[in-house]
Length: 371
Image 1 (cartoon, one colour):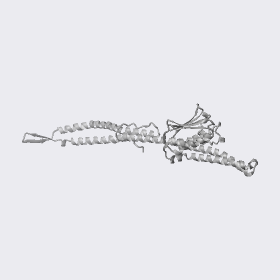
Image 2 (spheres, rainbow, N blue to C red):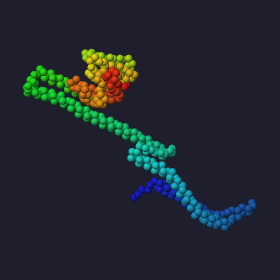
Image 3 (tube, rainbow, N blue to C red):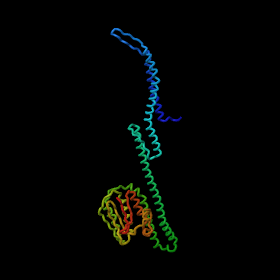
Image 4 (cartoon, one colour):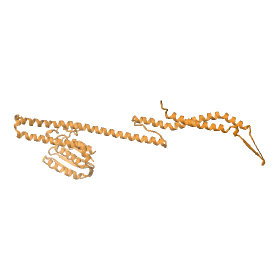
């Protein structure tokens, strides 16, 4: 059986109620205008009185009965109009809410219940609007989080693929060397030469595995390490101290200017790893006789090193895991291509923005950390 919609149902209920009231009123009117109920009492003088039934009663009854159909028609007509207006006033907002909620179910972002009344229906419309906006906001946040998780998972998969590929090369070389030494093939009988070489390969593998594990634990480290107020002048001074000696042995000047220092709230160990990797990277790829500068610029930490500027094409990939520009960054120089990837991962985990650009005068690279 098909359900009756709310407007005709409300209209029928209201009209029926009003017609019932009209009918009762007319029945009572007819009942009270019967001739036997119309008795006129006339009192003349102080000592004389009489009762009489007048023909006017029949006249009134006939007039009322004659007027009943017209009165009934007028009342029915007025009842229909009142029922229609009442039903429309009551059901139009509900129909509007029903239409809008259907649009909301289809996730139309511009769906809004436009009801200005201050009664319960108006409050219901406001609650629906608030609930829908909260739902849209939650869905949007979930989409952003889903996208972030997908990007994170993709990044992890790409990193594991790159790591397995990078580890495969030294492991294969180490295995081949050891196998040839065991079989005593040709030059591999010279253990004094190839055992140190094997040890060097294993040390390189250990360093790569350590960096890979450290990078994979970035998210966990960020959650476990509480951010504290750090004196950046003290932090940079302690971090740069060992690199001053390393730079000196290479004929490089490491200039540190701690004026303009300030404090910042951040995870100290993660941030120390970031600064350490950037400075170490600068020391490795700065030529003899050149300079590395570390200083503050307003709320930024600047680390510059004089070197051959990295081409724009390479800069687009410089923070990818195990990436080495062909012109200089290769395995022979000892880099494993993870330093800047770790820097990028940690800074993003700490929600710190940065830039890495080429300098024109003097030629080199500038790393800026925005705090």
